[in-house]
Image (cartoon, rainbow, N blue to C red; front, side, top):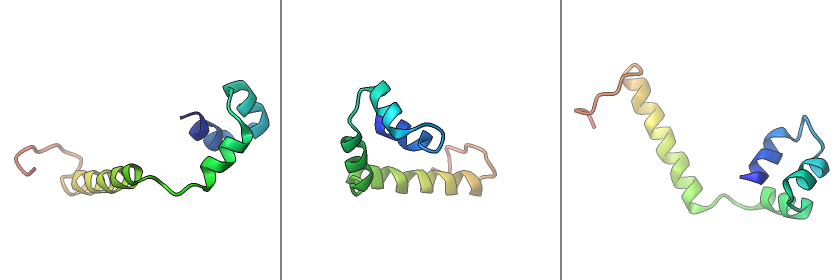
Length: 67
């Protein structure tokens, strides 16, 4: 979660400063950026894409009968 924060805000604040404030190492942050996404993260991304597709197909409405 901390590394994601640093990554999201790295264009606005220096990475070194954010790592120091969040008490994480810069090397840890850069290693995190190079890692492949975990199986869980990839599964969550697929699930999120499916949910968004179903939401769009139902014009933004929740219809439990179709599920």
